[in-house]
Length: 478
Image (cartoon, helix red, strand yellow):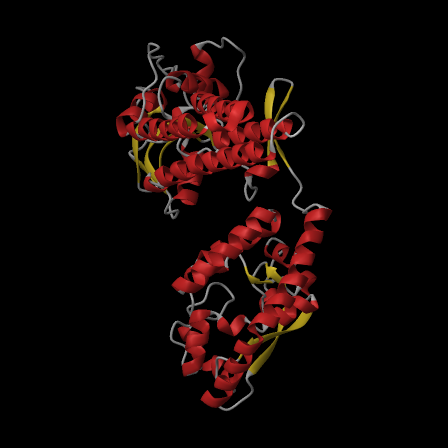
């Protein structure tokens, strides 16, 4: 965005190179009390009432240390909630985390003074239980609140078009309309729609339109026409509302933990952390892969034997299917699966190319005639993947990572897609839990690259948990 000095006149907002007509500035509303959404107010009252009742009922028997811990937890929680913007109160866990930290510090301090172990134990149980209870209430309210964000886009045609193309297919984003920063000489927008999204006004109309449409966010799209001066005035116009103002930064594929805001010479910069995971995280992932695969192999060994016998009984051929796959760095390894197709499946693929439903270089068919009756069940339940635990134990694969590609598929990779080969392929991954065969090739690549660039412990645990749900729902299996 173009920047202008403090106190820049209205002429600074002219549309460069297109016209000399002064663009109308964003009108400044009279300051008033911030609006409150009923859901946010009810949630806060319920949570604070629960904490107050628990405090009044259970704190007196705990003695001075217990009363102090509970009181500080309550005050911290209430203060942190009050400090948050209204639109953040139903989705932020900051108050709960900070209240838990305060309570924990008080209890830790109590261990060094005259407090009986029984009182310390009761105080600990009260603080932890109260914090978890408050978190549960917030989570319940949050789950009942709509998860779909309603957004008003503000910017020039090019910048807004980019956001529409990226957010259009997203089920959790609803674009209510566009306020164009570009206008004709009479101040009206240059077009009525942008990629089928209605243009509902110009830049000066954005605050009033946001309130009228009841959007959750106003998203400013950076570009040569939308200036930093405009964004600042927009923040002034929205400061007394419960509408969040956000600026769409062009930082793709980075999770929030890798992006740190910094100020250099009065200019806000986004510092993007390295994509390579730190050594302790890489070591932890290595240990989890080895220990986890060994334990799981022991547990599922009887199941594997039974499934192997069923596969052999169902159709002629070996019970275990071996296939060359591309591993880390593009090196080839032998991957093991329970056989789900007839033994002559490779020779039949040429006759089925016209029926290919796969994404990009992937060959997939929803009703592949080469799949055996038992194989359909194994694929639907993902039980055919269990022998890959041996690949993980050997070090060829990881429990979580990108889909293991065929070597012939990697021949068509460009430098961008080849990035997914910088880590070990996984038994499950972000692509597998996000729809698998239902996804287009570009979306599958984006998910794999997002995983490669943002490996975290919490991310690994999230994918592992989502894998269970995907298997139960048979999401994208074919």
